[in-house]
Image 1 (cartoon, rainbow, N blue to C red):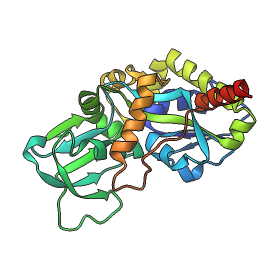
Image 2: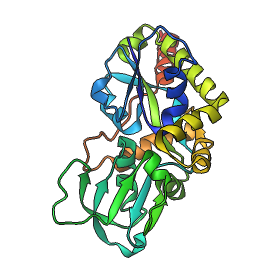
Image 3: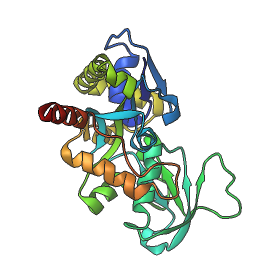
Length: 272
């Protein structure tokens, strides 16, 4: 039984209170940069990238009361040497990106920017002779402006395209944890959210010290974060998985929502 936290810039308001022990718990808490679905067991609860959650549809459910939602602005950006509408096709370089960034650009590249990807390359892969015209950056790098060229906030692009916010991270509860209630882990995460919101300036200070991010830009992004899924957010996270999983290792569907299981159980009890 472990609480796993994907250690990203947008999860800091939940991660910092736990790491700094502003919220005390006897439950083990593990922090992992670019956490993969394979790190999360069926007895665990995890705050994980929405993209990675698509790999857990048979072993976990989503607890909608704790999430990270980027409402129209975020630290995931696309950089191009020229205006995006001047590019017809390009290799896409994913530079220091989390899984949400990858699924987001796959969802937007053709439908919003009109660009066809010739290939996707990761920072640890050989680039070959083809120079990338499209580079995706994330976290503190995405908050800075390039010295030349153009940069587009992908959370804003998603909102313009769909009218929806980007669900960056969701909380998944393993089916074994769900069977025993999973309530203690969720209480810990709820307390961390409350502490992070209350002490948001301290959290931003720690992020700025660690990353060198501009505090004003950081404040603009973190002040727009939300930490619970609305009905519209639930639609958005499913929409993002369906649109952005093509050509990737991610699935096209997300795990069922935890409260939907209760509705189903209540209906079954009522019909018996």
